[in-house]
Length: 339
Image (cartoon, rainbow, N blue to C red; front, side, top):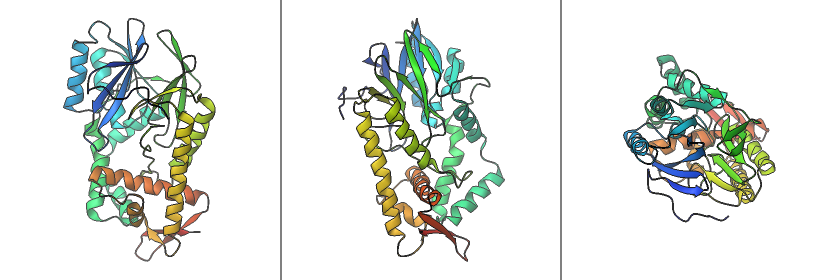
């Protein structure tokens, strides 16, 4: 892997990362402390890719940009890659402020609206029962419910209408033509853009240079197989995207060496599956007991919520392939063992 840019830009300060493409970096209040936003030259303005999280800092950076560097060349449209708050958080606010069209895949648009609606007593109780059945203690359950409930505060209301894009579509942005690719696992229908002529690949969160994108199971779909979806998406990307493309990801630095990184990510998940199988060989384990095997370091509440979802994703992947099985104990808790 090679990194064409050694250092990221300062928060809120646009820099050119390719001809006609500006790179912005906004801070996040999490351990993963930033998100990359891209501006693509679009006639007399800029198409915006992702909006950042809904907080005062991000609003302040957008306000400063719109009154400064973007005053003469305004946003023309807003393309949001997926429903996570660091990407869609300010989409409604920015679309309204700039009077521009929101462009998303259908699944991501509807998923964002779904998560903003979460929070009635019955839903919270159902989530709590699921987490208890997995063996989580009450402080961990509280952290997970805080994540579930916190989505609405980290995002703004989306426009009631949007433009749908899907895999196989082509977007004309300025003088470029971008192929629309989508992938599952990290999100359900995450949008990526490929300009084949210029070997530019805007990869969102699907392929990152330094970290593995989180792949999680949510309580409302407890038997989902997002890891299977993610690995399948990686295999397709290796076929669809040239290895010499410059990858512009949503976190970390731009890089070259996409196919090597895809191989590393696939090997990473294969190793995690082997670690879980080895740990469950002697006796069945609660899911809560698997989390520290994969994430032995001390985790904050936000990290714990993602670690739980990722541990379950690996278990479900192996359950779907008959490599593990589930035992329901007399206590009503779910334990898993190697098949």
